[in-house]
Length: 469
Image (cartoon, rainbow, N blue to C red):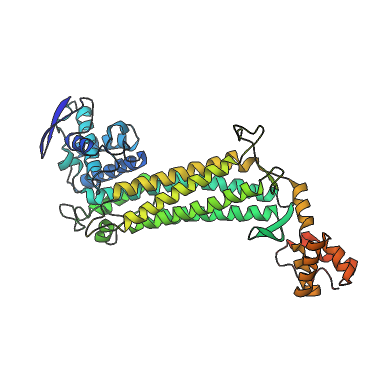
């Protein structure tokens, strides 16, 4: 053990820890979940500290030598090399002050190592006076939240959704020739192609990609420069602009200084907006996963229009049973992500006066939601969608037996007569064709043309194109 001091006095902490007294107090104060803040958030905080050091150097607030050392140590934080030295629990001070000080102390102590000084000596840089120069936890932690979540959206979730979209679009093209019965209210409806169904799924994921982009855009404004309450006390007036420019260079994203620093620190509405986009993406993926497991239900007692890849035995008692486990996985992922999104909504509405004091929990919820949605979407694409096959014979069987082909007869015999035909066919077990011909409602040739299912799947098809009768 070694001893370090902060404004409250001396604290004993592990000899090999790069954090200091303030962090150790937080470790002792918050033994709650055993779960530290997400690695992505800590990496984002490292990027923010790099940008702050550069800005302070450019403004003449920090010497080039100190700036170089702070940036070097902060780069190790951003690269994940010092992750073991960030032990503070998610459930901590609501501003994230403990984590901000954790970063300040780790960077300062790592600088001491790099400079050949003793860890804990606060030489040659001080965690508050140098590493935290021009900053407050109240503006830096929200800045790290926006930077880290935007990066996670752009680099983790978006590529996974793009991949799923590509796989679904490929299946839509492959399944285009397969005609099947459509279903509304879980009841038979007019025909579609399996490819048309899958084109809808692909379009949902394409919109999910767009929503991920909108979520990144929602996080553009950064709070850096507002310091304690948004007034910018103890901060150079040009600090924020330089921090933003540096972060844009580091990330390739398009951040801007907050238009109103009081809103940027007091409210977390941007995070709530991101949670809404994530919840919508989860809803889309749930719909797709459920449809695929319904279409693959069976193999003999269900719809059976799709053959799902067999990934593992489905039962401990029923030999040979295979279950739609990838759909089940993705549905659970989405329920979890939507729960996390609702958590962010509750956090967002819980801010008071000049600060929202739930930021660590927001960071956890958004990063966790992004992580599981990305992993779930990618695994679903690779372990399920890629291996899907159409059972064309089953699709044709159900199509031929459907009574809803009668819809195509509306222009020829009218809705009421068509309804009588459908009900009689259902009651007697006869086909639509048999009932129509027996009643003399249409000629055989006109009836064959009208009930040809391929023409019913063509967008913009004229209802009278099949011929009169």
